[in-house]
Image 1 (cartoon, helix red, strand yellow):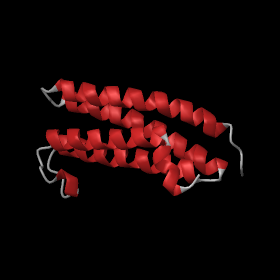
Image 2: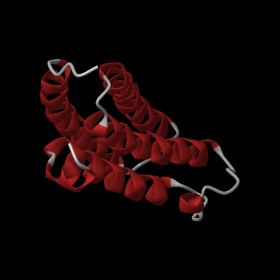
Image 3: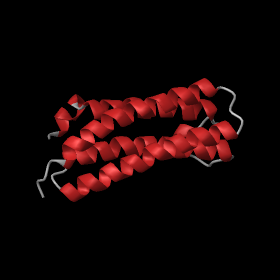
Amino acid sequence: MERNSLNSLVVYRKSLALRDLSEAVASYFSHNKEILSLRKIDCFRDDISRSLLADADLITKEVEQAALSNSHSVRMRSLSYVNIMTRNILAYCNGLERDGVKEKEYLNLLRKEIRIFRITFKKWRKSLMNRNDD
């Protein structure tokens, strides 16, 4: 697969949507309004917001790496990381909720986006696992 055709992958576009929504949620809930610059973290909520940004960005990068790699082992490692990062994001939603976030609808929106992404990701992962070009 070429880098130019990456945007044609549904799972890649879903990862971008997830990243954008995660960025918006992290920015909204963070006390540190410079959270997107990833400067010093001041509190638990800012720490969760920073982790949310990092993991959502990693999902997109790992999907890209898996799509572009000819190595089965690299693809499998990237797919494994994506699973971990999606679980992390769900845990961050729970952490924000426990930290007293009142606007639970934003967290539920992010959880829904994760579910949608995971459905697409699982279908794509199955197709990649069947490819063997090591």
